[in-house]
Length: 431
Ligand SMILES: *Cc1c(COP(=O)(O)O)cnc(C)c1O
Image 1 (cartoon, rainbow, N blue to C red):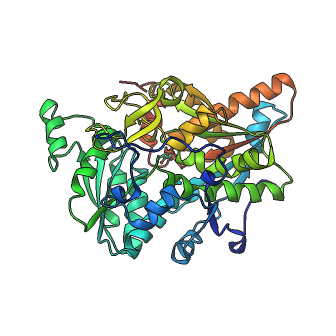
Image 2 (cartoon, rainbow, N blue to C red):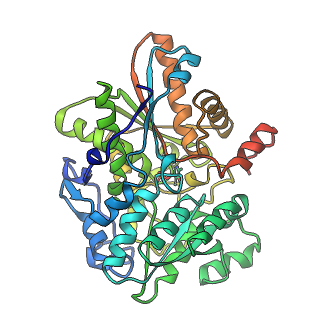
Image 3 (cartoon, helix red, strand yellow):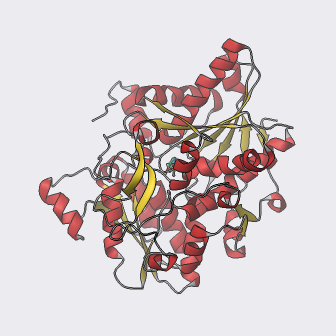
């Protein structure tokens, strides 16, 4: 089929928790002062109890609340497409499918976790949320979710992307969010960086520090768009749907491609399939594709490190380029993070997930090919997955093998056109 949909009744009713299936759990987060594992209660100033429970839960299936499901049904299931025109152009015997999260209300997969996060905060009487956003997709998703659950929203938006993608700011403000370019003059850490450079481009690590600094009393909590276990958990709705959709075409993937920033869309598409690997001895390759300018998984060290630049978070065992790493300026802003989800890091370390890195120009070229054949303009982040999958399809052609490739397209690129414009004009830079 060209496009495989699911009816409302077929949408999965639970999130899938891979922690239940892992033979060996990942190393726990540590308190940097004592080097002892963090006790769940220590996270209570930051997150509502329900999310902390999900963070450490070993339950295999966690029910999606009705109030969240109601909103999911406005855009889920997202479509699964067969990339027939791309296959033809490449002349590959491989079958290429892609799951299109660009069809969400805010244009990316981030809404899948923003909604339950806002819901659980509301349930526990919280009035406002604060967060950071890199490329802006997470800020857009949380703005919508906060509005739908009647919460205020304060967003620290990495200055480089605030300037690159001003329409994302307008989108957030349409939902009444307060948006500040980061580093901002509203926090101690922000002022420190502004003093060094009044036009500091910012980074996710700095923006996280600013948002964390704002969580001072009990009325405002912090919300994170990737990396943590509960965020990855919420995203598993993607892979569960994809599995049902592929079944309708009598298919099962040989290999799954996803871009990698912090790990949430990769986890979302792949964990439900890795469950089959862990429990049913199925074989499926999972490949994380990252930019060669922020090569966290391919070049980073697997170690305990801080999640933010001010070193205020717990220590996480993860692949990291160092908490002080400020990534070069690239168009795929959602992939500029020094660290990686501890769960994904663990699976990479154990050999369940492969990693590759690709150049910005190759990625934009792959996006152009995809747009010209499939008609969908992907986010520059998502185009990393497309680049990886195209190379895989070409390998299948050379070897004459009929593999089934599944790509996760994490978002659309309608608000990334300035970057594509620079690419078309030959002015694409890495600074
Ligand atoms: C945020 C984002 C990413 C990167 O984050 P992950 O947690 O690795 O998924 C990728 N694509 C899009 C469209 C994003 O918004």
